[in-house]
Amino acid sequence: MDRTRRKYRLEILGAFRLYAPDGERIEIASRRGQALIAMLALASGGERTRVWLQDRLWSSRQQPQAQASLRRELSNVRAILNCGGIPLLNADFNRVWLDLDQLDVSTQEAGYDHELLEGLDIPGEDSFEDWLRAQRRAQEAGVERDAAGQARLPARIVDMDAPVPGFANKTAIAVLPLQNMTGSVALDYLADGISEELIERLSRLRWLPVIARSASFLYRDPQIELRRIGQSLGVRYVLEGSLRRGADVARLGLRMADAETGLNIWSYTADLPLPFSQPVLDARIVEIIGVLDTRIDASEKARVSIAPTHDLGVEDLIWRGRWHLHRFTREDSLLAEACFNEALARVPNSAEALIQLTFFHARSIWTGRKNQAQMQALSRLAQRSIAADGEDGRAYMYAGMAELWQRRPGPALTLFYKAVALNPSLSLAHSQIGSTLILDDRPTEATAPLQLALRLGPNDEHTFLVLGELAIAHCMMGNWEHAIDHADQALLRRRAYWYAHVTKINALARQGLLTEARNAHRHLLEIKPDFSPELVDWLPFMDPRWNEFLKVGLRLATPEPNERIADQGR
Image (tube, rainbow, N blue to C red):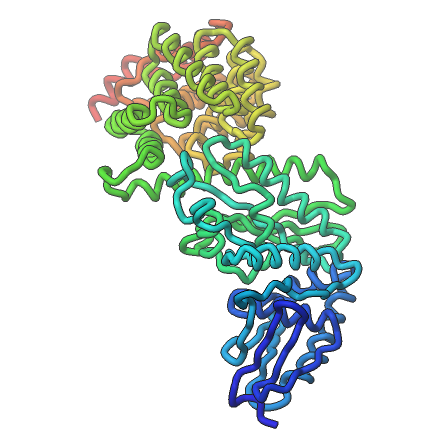
């Protein structure tokens, strides 16, 4: 009998009924077989992954058993359906699908009051029951489904295609559940737990909205396109990954992609020792969040840098301002300030605009060695930022900077520790803790938070500052070679950073390497002809002998008068 001339017909309102093209009813005795066909028929494109089907139909079994059971069920159902012509049910190594061109699916009929897949029950399979319950609710409401197969709310209730009030055009990220590819369902808890921990920690980055677990965990199927996920959840970035088994370790692999283009922005791998250790995982998560913060920040600044200024909304104005601010030129600094002020003119209580304007003034004070009145103004602006969003660690960090530069290390440390309590991945706050300890004559204690700052933001634009702080800490401890090494690394990243030059000159001079120190001093003046030793007096050491220490080192490296005359004659 040739069943390919007309279409198969599947009725799933009421009891499961499947008919051949000639109208003859096809009997599928297995409940899981019926469920499998119905699940594929209701899926987008008629397709599901093997993993997805195993998780719904054999979730009560170990993974190897579930895989074998799915293979048997597919073999049995295909023997019934694919008896001639073009196969109706198809499968490959990863996917299972129905050829929907050959199948009419009846899911709604006027006046038909039967429920979807009436009487179909698979004892012990709660995941299937959850799926069926959601489908019945969707069917009763007559709504369409989203990319995850979940019921979409009707537009009369909420327009899911309209921007979320107060959320429009914001950068957002979704963390998808990790794929457990270890071969052991016993590690499902670890895969989900890591995903949940990433969501929780990312949510502490107050500038970055994170989609809740209840929404992002619907997208377990790795075959769903990132673009569809991005559109359904309203996110620009998607973080996904997997756990694989190694020798006594679980190998964590993560990648972050642009949801619109699908292009990878960042990837990461790490081994987690088994049995599972929470402290090890916590350290990895803090590191991951710190790097993600930096990478998304860089991606957004690059995105808005090419957008026409007249098209920028408030959020994009803030990103454009951040882009200008991190170009480290006087002209860009003025443009950054204008962007932040324009954003505040449009939304006067914008916490993000206030925080970025506070950062602008902090940078201006540090680079311009501003006076006490400007530091007090910075403190007031930081307090406005805290009032706008008391859960954002950055606001406390900037308030701490104002305290530190006014030589109040105690209150500064209190504010910095509050900042890292709110956001343990805030690398700049960790570096400020290290700076405070250095300025309070505690260089030995300073190295640990500075090293952590480097670990959290290895490619951050402020890395040169952290390296410079490590250089001066080693210099204060008499570790001359370490001081020179860290100063050189800072200068590779910011050649005009005079503080690192001064530290290197001191470390060379204190070892008696006066020729090298004088060469380093000449190099500083070539790069910054306007440098003056009086700049050292601005550094807010609690003990002024350290300011004098640095100036003495500079004097040791200053060429003698006859050497200066010789230099001028060259």
